[in-house]
Length: 142
Image 1 (tube, helix red, strand yellow):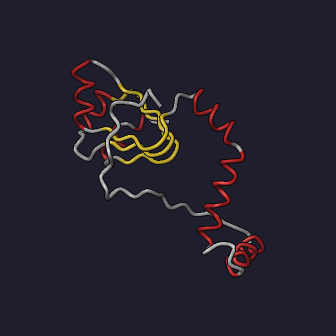
Image 2 (cartoon, helix red, strand yellow):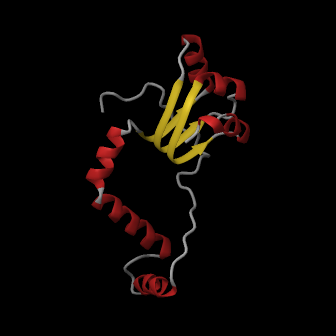
């Protein structure tokens, strides 16, 4: 991990570490999950689902690793502060946000600054930014 990005900052503690998703599950599958919970294999439905997802990700770890490297994705939590974007602007650089995990653009970043410094946004996971900044970058987001 010698090539860690220099603009990684600790996120504010009030940012959630998870994002809620909703799935539809057939009644028989749901019954099987409840049976596993009832028999004490898992503490609750969420525990079962998280474990199942982690197992699938682990099962495909090599493919995911190759794909991540091929696409040049930054893994984990990336926080872009106003100072980061102002520094890019001063240097005449445009940023390409390419993250697998959570990308966070600070709340005090203006729409003008975002458009002047962010060339593209590609996030697999979640993007946290003000609604105005998300809207300003909509045409650059894939």
